[in-house]
Image (cartoon, rainbow, N blue to C red; front, side, top):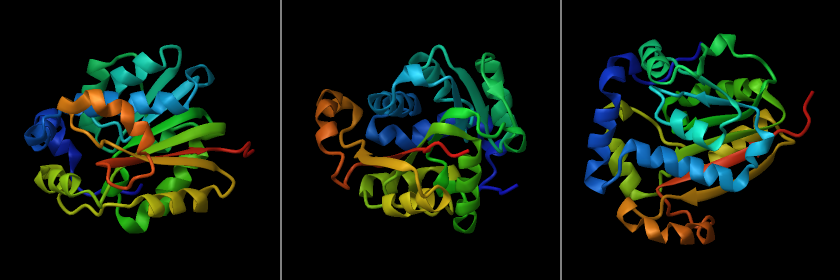
Length: 230
């Protein structure tokens, strides 16, 4: 099994606090980002088509309640390298199905959600992880990946202030898309930049859909849809 940078077991009990402290000077919390990403996701995906969702690299489950809110009729699964994080997640959200990565079913998930995970994966192992993700995706399933935009100075400051981001290597939009198309050449992809405005300017978020092309957002996303791979 490929290991990610950092020992998240040691951060599991204080993960939320540590993350919020690193974000605090910018006025956001981890729950704000989690909800924000699921709001974007459902602008591109019809919830009725999704019967099973995997939160890959779920941590303690910050995204789980928002996944359930957006996909109330779907099975919700979670996996993470940190066993302690999964224990906390299971206690908080007993409806979620917990699995280690080696036991995940193949060709099963209609949606795999990966939020700010790839920059924790060693560069030399990223292709392997991407291949694994497509193995777990259903024939027309969607893989949705959010990542930090390495060209945004505010994002770089957040990463530098976060204790469990020490030693990470950020990945840009074009490199991530290349990984996706290498793993699944026939996949249809959509991409865009996001997080242009801080939470206290959330009323301006309506205009973000017109700025998806602009590479100045704090993060970006890539949505890849399998094309009937059997």
